[in-house]
Amino acid sequence: MSAIPHIGVTPAPEPPYDDEKSPAERPTPQVDGALALDALVWGPPGAIPDERKLRHLGQALAEVLSGRRPPETIADKLTGRAYRELVRAGRMIHANRPPFAKSLHVKEPRDGAVEMCVLVYCGDRNHVLAARLERRGVQWLCTDFETA
Image (cartoon, rainbow, N blue to C red; front, side, top):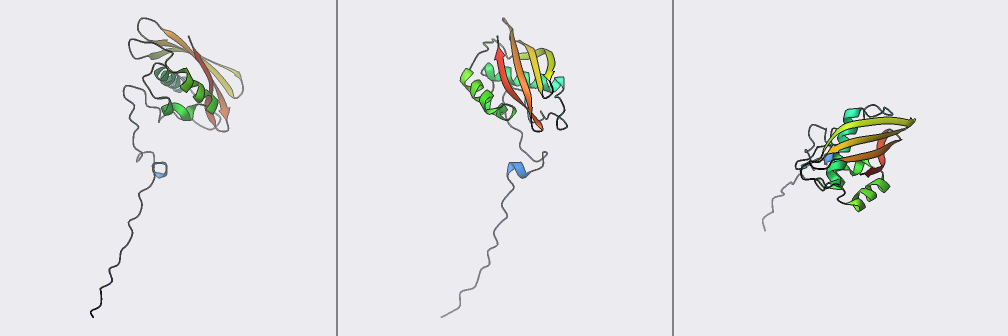
């Protein structure tokens, strides 16, 4: 009887998960015709979000409320209750063109809370979108929104 040669098998290392990769290595999410929010970082812990980033959040909310963006793409920017309300609300902005968040008004009613109102251009009829953000630990989350 001849000896069977021993074959050594070295397991290949498992590739890193997306959250283990550096930001440059992470795949870019595909959101057709909508603002990508991966870069929407509020800045230093505790800092109030700047107006440009608040406008981007308003734009993303308008895109969800017009049916042009899936709500899960901004789930990490909302509290659980606000996210459930966004999903339940469905399409509230009826537009014959993609919405465009333009004029923004921001106020800070108290430390740790920001309220914003943004005018959303939608073609024939414009809408107003209001949102409240509150600091939760080191991040800001949208806790409530409404549109008219």
